[in-house]
Length: 240
Ligand SMILES: NC(=O)c1ccc[n+]([C@@H]2O[C@H](COP(=O)([O-])OP(=O)(O)OC[C@H]3O[C@@H](n4cnc5c(N)ncnc54)[C@H](O)[C@@H]3O)[C@@H](O)[C@H]2O)c1
Image (cartoon, rainbow, N blue to C red; front, side, top):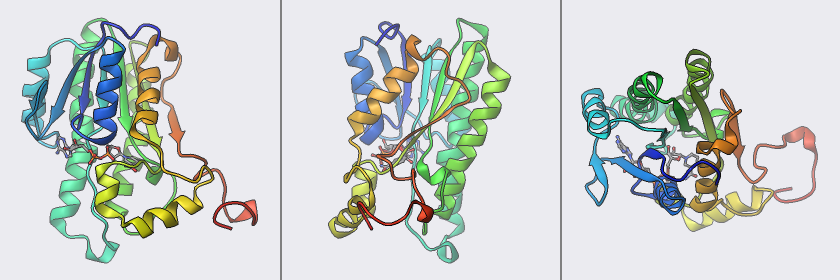
């Protein structure tokens, strides 16, 4: 990917799933990758992204950076009437507060220095309704709104974009869905399957590269056609 080699890139939640695949892809492209995660590990700076003081300390340690991939996220499958205050606060703190604290800390350095790019992992849950994820969906819609506002404030030095994956087969997904539920979902996706974390990693690498220099304020959907249609699209094909 053009203009990626040598870049200093921070990936939050980079120890698992989409984040781990993205960190690996960026390393393969010659980037210097720092991972922010709660669990310890090689090349990991331990940090709960929902804790602003921990985020500030982590970015102090990192210093200058070229790109942030604010990817850490969490979810619970729960009917809206049963969402507890504890889970509501945790989901908002990680997915929305955490992404914003990281973006703020990154942009401060980028705006004073050589510029950079920020990518949020949102979701198709930001774009259409999904039952049993009301708290999660609100955070992802928040990231799409945040993307547009920050892109306006920080252009032209810092580009800000949101990626909306559809269903991706990761530990998060496997923890919440049985095989029967996965099969049911796959039957309704035009591409007939979940995305792989590596497919998302390729998109993140492109958006972080110089090849994507004119993208800012955008919401990029990679969902195998999941949200392309609606009831007015008519019967026929998968899930008909
Ligand atoms: N898997 C999907 O189908 C899917 C679809 C759309 C969007 N997403 C989003 O993609 C991102 C990655 O999800 P994934 O599927 O790879 O899940 P995952 O559970 O495999 O990875 C999530 C990562 O975030 C980290 N994390 C969670 N809370 C954190 C916190 N407070 N501080 C620091 N790190 C924290 C976890 O430790 C883990 O490394 C999430 O934002 C998720 O909402 C996933």
